[in-house]
Structure formats: C-alpha cells, structure tokens
Image 1 (spheres, one colour):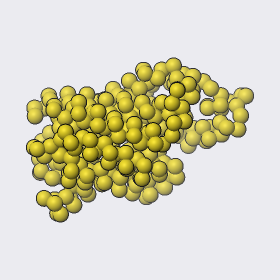
Image 2 (spheres, rainbow, N blue to C red):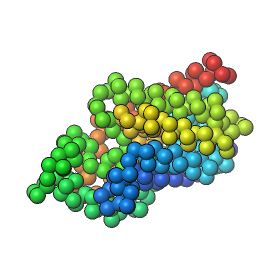
Image 3 (cartoon, rainbow, N blue to C red):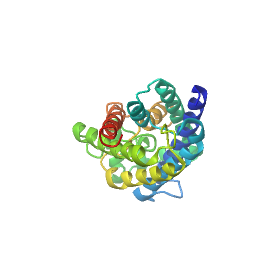
Length: 264
C-alpha cells in the first residue's frame, strides 16, 4: 500500500465511521429526531455497523485501521513504524470530516435541541433541565455526547482502566481473528467479526465512559464540537479529553504485547 492509498483510505473510512457512529448518537439524543430515546442498544449496534461499513469501504486501500490504537498495535506486532504517521493523519482528518457531516445532516435538530429551554436551562425551564445544566457546569455541553465520550462517574483511574480494557479486547480480537491475508489490516470476514466485537464492547463495557476505544474517534469530533457555531453548546470537557486518547493507545499496545507473547 502506498502512502497516498493509506492516507486516502483512512480519511474516507474514518469519516464514514464517525458519520454513522456519531449519526446514531445524534439520532438518539436530539429532541426533534425520529429516533429520539431509542436507547443504548441502538447506539451499540449503530457503532458496530458503522465499523463494518467503514472497514469494507477503506479496506482495499489502507487495510482499514480506522483507529490509532490498532495502528500502534500492528506496528508493535510487525516492528514497522514507517507508515504510522500517515495512518494517524488520515484517521484524524477523517474523524474531523465525519463529525462535521453529522452536524450538517442534523443541522435543524441541533438548532432545535440547543434552543429548547428544557434542554439548555434558562428562564421558563422546568426541573428536567437540571441534568443538562449540571453537565454544562462540569464542562460538558448537552450535545457533547454526540461528538465524543464522557464518564458517568468521573474517576480518573477507573475511567482510564475502562478505556484500556475495552480497547485491549477490541485489538486482541482483531489481531487474532480479524486480519487480512497480509496481516496489515482488517480482512473481509474480519470486518464483520470486528463489528460484532464493537457491539459486544458497547453493551458490556460501554456504560462507564461511553467506550471511545479509539483516540481519533474521540479527539477529532471533540475538536469539531469546540469549533462549530452551535448555540448554547457548552464546553468540550477538555479536562477529560486525554483519557480516551491515552487509554486506547495503552490498551492497544498491551494487546499487541500479549499477542506477540502468546500467539505469534
């Protein structure tokens, strides 16, 4: 794979991943959406199908890493770090594009949601807005969860451990079951397997932090949230932002180390 193929494949694939994954979060969250309150099951399966779609689209070009944690794990497994910066650049750019497309697709719903006093508080608001107001006071605006993750209980050690564990499961599953014949990315069957692994992680381990398990998936959309001209959007919770970056990278590295010890 050439550097241009890698960059283009990862940009397109990660953009699709975030468009569909962030899209299901928007569909479930925003007040004027037909899927409002569809629940965690919809989110878990939405993200799983997002991974599958993105993997099949980008696999022929880049191997469909779509995740810096997997890129690092494969570099550790193979000892080749030469293409890591290219993968990282494509993944981050794709995440930025995908998050912006979610905003475009749900533009009217974002405006309706963020000008509703029941959501953002203010004069005439009822007690139901208390949670949204409290979230904004802690630095996380009422639609930040559409773009990036956040903890239900803010405990640095636990939040970091949850992201490490979830990413460890994801990356170990990819390394043992999901690689293509070249061993440098997801295969055809691997894309489907990985999609269901993502659903499983979401259902089993997603409750504490929202299971970023992907630094680009969290950081890129968080940057977009900070930049978009959304009314009453609140903060982007930058004090938490390092956890869904460091945790997944550590989890991926640990999975690669175990793979080399036990499976290689």
